[in-house]
Picture 1 (tube, rainbow, N blue to C red):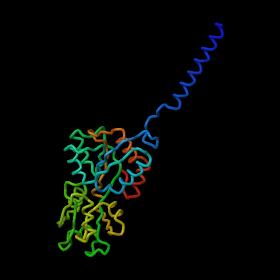
Picture 2: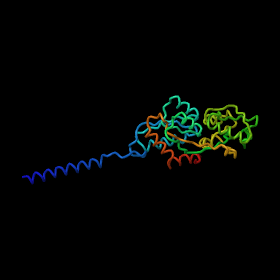
Picture 3: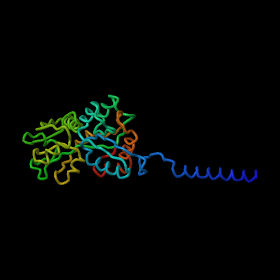
Picture 4: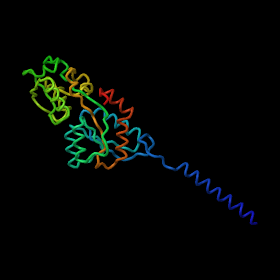
Length: 264
């Protein structure tokens, strides 16, 4: 009887152990890696420069498709305006700037986690209506008194780049208006309110046949580098890191490159 009881107990213990191991194998969670594993969930709020609207809208759509259960909320404006919003308490998990100056300002306010990552570059291009009524062919043409030119305000990255080109060429401009974002400048051109506007190469490409782009060699005097970082006050750090990884990964690089952005 003792031998039978011992054998029965051993068999029972072995069965329980096997069931336990099987349960561990099937139910153990895998670490989240930002891919389509279903591990990520929740909402990530991304504040991004206006010039990133098209690309980040696509990147957000791709991210949500690869990570069911996630939602990317996007807010676009001039980089300096976004910094002001974040420092005043606006909820953001990720900040993508059109220049390093704005990111530095946010870091100095101790609102950046870790180190920002440079993920793209951009340069200015002249945007004119398709018919080019003012016959613009160079940066110098923008200084002609009869030309209605629109630029970004100096505190906005595209405005800072414009100032840099003006100083490098010695050609000052007298814009009829200075806008708070590059998309507003483009809007003035597409609506016919301006003969020309200084925007980014990517904005011209994204506008399609609504505008005509006039490249100018002096644009290489002001190459804007785009950094991205997790905001220190963000609520979803894991999702923020995963989105940044998507932007800086190979798929993200392709979306940006197809839109006309350069590599840092």
